[in-house]
Image 1 (cartoon, helix red, strand yellow):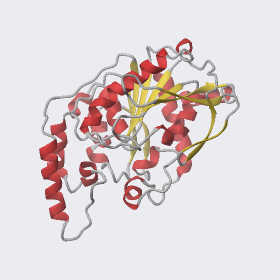
Image 2 (tube, one colour):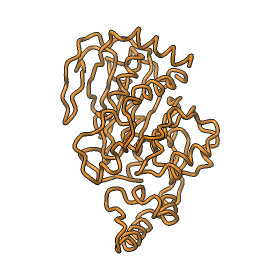
Image 3 (cartoon, one colour):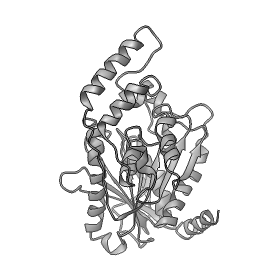
Image 4 (spheres, one colour):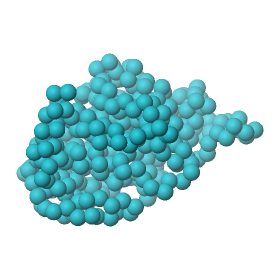
Length: 335
């Protein structure tokens, strides 16, 4: 409560700042890096795809708290569904960078799954490098303590950076054991169980494809010593060695949505929570679905995506600003 009070004072002190926005070229062929930051320039409505956000586009940055937080988006996503969280972070003085993950974003989903999961932590590190090399931000930041926030597949990225180890073969093992209970996590949007006479065939085909594709049992690990605090929201986690979370490399916060229909909590974030005694539950939304931590939520979702990502009946989005403040308070505490 004391930390949240401090955050409210900081937000009040920074309230005059607008949220600036620039897009940096990614390094080594990576996608662009969207950067949000405090600015004294006036904000104007800025439209990007279906989203309209009040921003000071291309404006000069002003000195904030000297810290950077990187946001890793979910599969098929982008920076623009995290702008409410970014604004709360910016109002507390942070610079926020969101890389567009190669092959797993709104315009290209050719690498969804383990192929992307291997790349994502490296893309986070190169996003830190890109911001640090930019003449506008380099004088304003100390990059010895960086935060990482990730949601869904981005949560997988966050867990890997926090010290979790995973293997593609662990995904196959999980799905073989729990294909019925965690079907959307195993097959994504390819198909769904329909409670008809063909569900047995759907599960059999899915398991055959998964067993054929994901045979690599070698552990995948990653470390960036600049990252000092991590928050994983509704992360994909069933392919991790849960023992690797017994002592995370850095403070690790978890954000939970108990009505998640895409990633059954007991196999993913709930399993991490049980394994990670030092972890802090930053937010727990009893009525929240998988998309509860997206703000704004993407409009015009297809029926299949809406069933997995949309808000369940009874979920009140009025709680989201408080969640964003709690996530921001976590980074203020640890950075």
